[in-house]
Length: 146
Image (tube, rainbow, N blue to C red; front, side, top):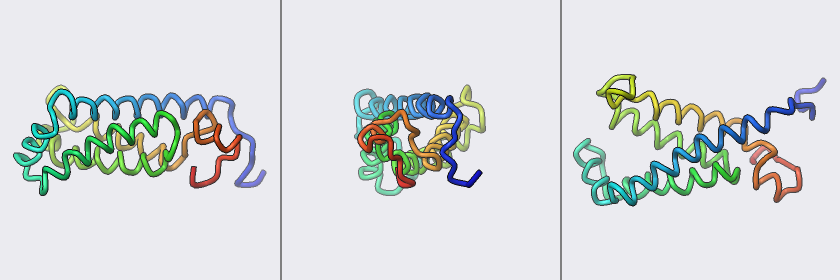
């Protein structure tokens, strides 16, 4: 069997779909929260308080990555790029907003953003799977850059 064998477990694509929905859906919820609940000026103020440079630029960028990138991940479009951008945003959250609280989320820790970052990297490495808009548009041809 070659390294590029077409044989795959039947559950692989379903697993990737569920992972995309969980990761992308969580990112979308966080992006909407930044826009609608905290508002961008509020998020920028929080970022400024954490010492993040250019908070007026970073706040909308993070909200866009979460909202747009999360939507793309859910749909399975540009999953590799969106996954890497999401991972970068979540690692930023780990090292700025959550690191001082420790690991556990009950204390405002970094377990959730770290988990999302790792799952987003996994999607960047695997691609969206066959149950995706990307694959549907390519009629089953999922190139390496999917």
